[in-house]
Image 1 (cartoon, one colour):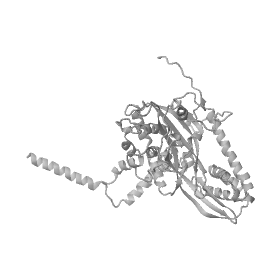
Image 2: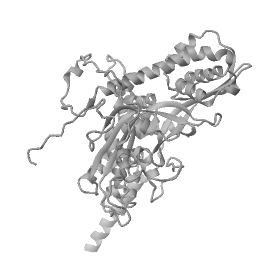
Image 3: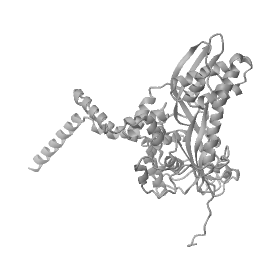
Image 4: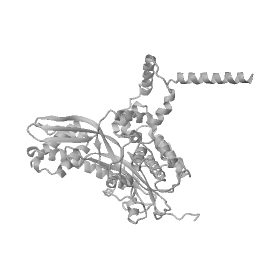
Length: 152
Length: 358
């Protein structure tokens, strides 16, 4: 796989997983990777705001709901790919790791190891967390019975 | 008008040190951590994020700690902080229809596809003080889990009614909504700006207006069509990529109020809609917002505007608790020159009256 053949769908998937995962869990998996190639910043981690938009009635015209904090970062692996990250919150290290992971995932010699040892376990964790919350919610599903009221 | 004053630096420093000492409380008691505030006072944190209009749990927790739990002061701190950050852009509109549901109820339909999911709620509690919580480490019942999670996505109740043509379609408007943090509000304001204003509005103010409309100062006959709470992904399209990526997940509470509408010359009788949304689990706020969104649509729907909750200039210009608190509290600042001139005037008038009486 070279950067020319990476489809935006797989890239958007891994960028989403890297952004949505907790920074400390990403850090653990990251340090377990061992020696990584040299890299440098194209854009140092920078904290800013993104305006979150909603829709009137949930599916109508858009409106501005409120902002959220976001950290973005871009890196270049020495002699390799450029990686970007946009990550909710204000963690510089989270954005930096996510950008570096994005770069390595575009490089054939690194793609497999980062996909298997970082992205896959994070994606699994996100899906397990979501399923657990869904099972807990399901246990609160209620059936109300309408009673005939005395005064009617 | 207040005037600039000089001096008092030492006294002000001492006053702030005294405040910081009071904020710390008894030194023999452990200091609150931001994790404790974020984890155990989460509804307070979510109110600060909603009205501070910045989704960041850690910042909101810090603001609450700094403000000794004063929500309005914490909201002010968060609003002030946001002005120091650059705006990177705007997200794609979030898809609440694809929300990972943790709570979803309807007071209008008993049997709705996906079912009624109570989720974490204070509804149906007896509101009795729980002294077991006062004794730290009280036992909690285990959290139940079903074998199967709730459905991945659930239709909105308004979609169900919409299919039958009994309810108006969702609001229409420009693809690029107005932004009241970038341009001052002009009247009449479009629904995009009204919703932005209400989303960051003071909960107490919106709640009272909503209540007034229910009691007769406004013409609403609302049903809670649907309330849903859970996580949605926030997506945006970075310039350097040109395609959408998810940058994180946020918790939202959405309320769809369904209201009676007798119809007009051009529109048949149908249900109309009010929409409310909050960061986190600010359900009371989302419900009140949905009621006030509907009352503010009075003019658009050809209804008479006769009550405060229907008057957009009244509602929108007084809904912001940072502005309101600032204007009320500025009265504490030195007004000595103003007051002196009024005092002079009163004395002169009394003198003139006394002379005229002689």
